[in-house]
Image 1 (cartoon, helix red, strand yellow):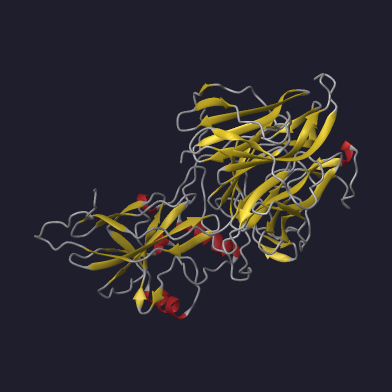
Image 2 (image 1 turned 180 degrees about the horizontal axis):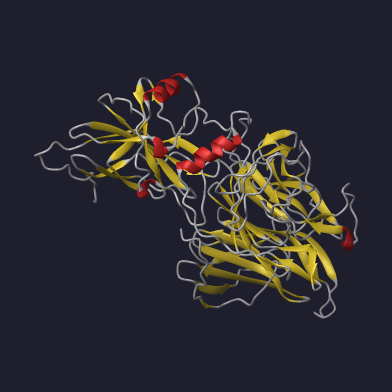
Length: 567
């Protein structure tokens, strides 16, 4: 991952530029439908991009057997499930003259069958039951299928129909039945031009146009609406709304994504990326301010990596690897020796080797949630403003505490529950003539983690821990933290005897400072067991299954690499 934009050289039937179109990804192909080509002129063309070859192709699906194909529109929803796309609603121009725009809100529903790999079959108009949602545009639609039930459902939220909406609709795709599910919790304010993404069993709602008044009264006057940076999710299994960032929550230090609408958001694994958008409330020279920042949200700890694999062994070192885990910032590698090891006498080491330092582009930090936080899976949002200085007071109204190397905040009064929020952004944003300039990369070491623990009073809780972990009389020692999924292991870190005795009795202890620890070399002819855990903005994930390797005995040839079956 380079964190760099690039402009691919596309070819074929390149579509004209358009706004407010429908967009789905099916493997390596992308389908784009409709949108506004220019003011008052909308499209109902369908294009396919093969991202593996960067080849555009205009496709012509068959018309439905009962009725007309979708009319030109913008602001519709276009959702993919299996080999079918589902089109709902949008805004059409009733006038044939593009200069005379007569808006017409839509609530029609179409199904588009896809061919495997490339191409489409045609449109169809499903026969649905129940009451259809009201006409709207700039709404969101997602599809979710519970693992235990296996019945896919489409959820439509919000949108615009003269005024903003915050109603939730459900379509059972198997029975084609519309319904309005009853929800619990505080429903987000009416909004349009927001985003909705599914990660796990949660639908995350961010941004959009909302009422400007604090009471949330619905009004048709455009001047009474503003962009928001509020953030909520709906548990799709329990239909309960949870608010993470409220609309009235102040963010004077720019540690959260600013208010915006018309942005885009995409889920990659358990990470949510938010890009761009515009803020219609802050105006410059009568133009809306467009954002140029990229944020990501880690919603849960990463899964366990694969077992550690041996590449090469010598008398006093191992070269090991493991499979990469998507959207992680580093890996914690630990080992256990069969032979008992004497505790360190407290002799300072020479520092962390370069291979044991996590320093991803733009800087990052490791963070463990304090024990006082609830065990419910609220997401952590991690923020990286390279130019932001750490001058936030720990005693402000929101009880936020900055990290030393990266601005990590904790909001403990959101939705009447303790919620930890930490967002990450890599951006150069120029607004009102002021440009934020990225600072040099920071290498994040355990000194930073130690300072963070001292400043916030955080304690490492249970496993996974950066301390040696004693499980069934087995002592685990840190080898280091690695950015990549491979490592050369010749040493590991020992704890002083007094610290070792305390850590064996207590469930939590302070984060160790590797610079103050003694490093122990590997012994020849000794069996070592390895395990590895991935790290992201939410902390350290579970450890992998244990692998066992033995260093070579002097005078004997080295062990070969792992045997692989090629055919």
